Image (cartoon, rainbow, N blue to C red; front, side, top):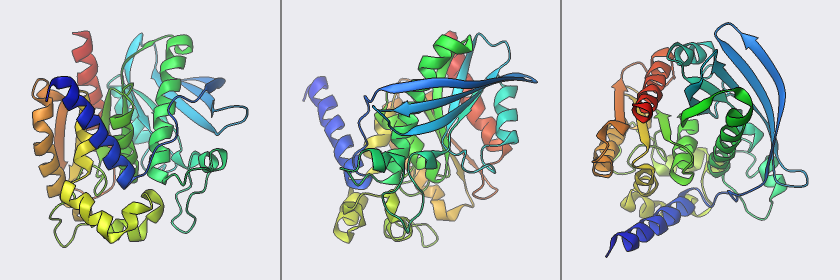
Amino acid sequence: MNGMDNSWAQAMAQQAAIEAFYGPLPAANVDLHVELTQTQHRPGYTLFCWQVQAGKPVGPRWALRLAWPRGAQSAPVLLSPDACWPHVVGAAALRQCLRLRVALAWVDRTQWASDDARSLHLGPVHRQWPEQPWSAIAVWAWGLGQSSRALRQEIGQGVGGQIARLGVVGHSRGGKAALLAASVYSQIDAVVAHNSGTGGASSLQNPPAQAETLAQLGAAFPHWLSAQALRPSVQQSLIEADAPYAWLRAIAPRGLCVLQALDDLWAHPEGSRRMVERLRPHWQATPWRLHLRQRSGGHAMGADDWREAAQFMRRLADESQG
């Protein structure tokens, strides 16, 4: 098999694994309308606020925020979908990013799809395109892809600076969506996934008794998965194939940073370590772009984790400018 044939086969395997696990994503090439609604100058940064609309004549709309380091002509950008969790994206996150001259962008992923296991397939994207029972993770990944398009457009035109590197960062379920987005959208230069667990950066195979299984994930959060991934026979096939490997390897040679708490046993830390080791051959030419950081301290994403994420983006930006 030549290189082109191998790339095609990998792309087909990636798409098949994603659709079996999370289902298809909404169309990537929708028209975007981005409107600047507010600019505020704050100590150390400028806050830009946009309304983004996808599709015509009236598509889903969402608020997108960006804190740009004051006076920066160029900066790496971290985009988070976790603004619905102020304990994740808050003052500590902003402080750690700005300290390293990294711009922080954020959006509330529930503006695209609801996160309620009792109500499947609800939200603005589902109402706009009801022909598909989109999973919430697939919609959130799509929203990150569209928001990254909007940032590339607006930062180049209206912010007065340039993007050095654009990364997505997500905590827990947000990490699953961030990883999926980075695997699908090539305009995303890097991804940082924090305690993303099953369906994220962790292997599906041989979980210990304390770790979340795919069956438990489907039972607790059926709206995150495709309908077929809720069937035991399909789950077994996904486990045997260790399905996330098919889309995680598609991120190479771009940046992949896995942040994992060793005592967050539900998120299967040993599975994350094994997955990263399996992925290393795909980053053989640029090994520094695949990074695993393990720590103690539980599931929450704190200031130290944000500092690690910002440092990873700063290293990638410095590499591109060196």
